[in-house]
Amino acid sequence: MKKGIAIAGILLLTATILVVSYALFPSVMAPPLQCRDKIDNDGDTFTDYPSDPGCSSKHDNNELGTVACDNGLDDDGDFLIDYPDDPGCVSPTDTSEVNVPNSTAG
Image 1 (cartoon, helix red, strand yellow):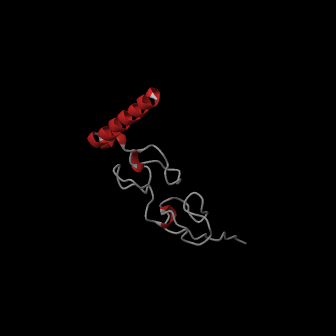
Image 2 (spheres, rainbow, N blue to C red):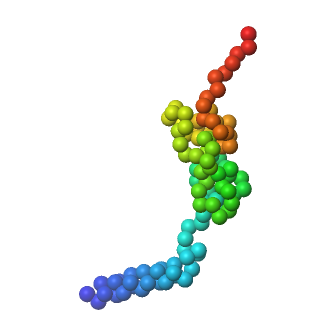
Image 3 (tube, one colour):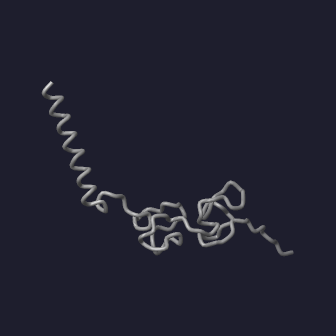
């Protein structure tokens, strides 16, 4: 019985420390913003500000952009989304996902 009470006390103390730490130091406890977390969150092969075109600043928390090839949507209805997965996108700054047919000279 005493062991159970001791464990409950330790858990309560730990929870209290975490709550107080978050209240006093929220920036330390919160995860880093997407545009400075060193992760390619939107899968466009570019990471963080200023390299990722979807990041407007290092304070931006969303790597998705507003143009067709970096907005997280299937704009052309081919079931492929954004650069590099949609062949209609030549880069994440491309404004159209529409595939351009190959032309052959001859």
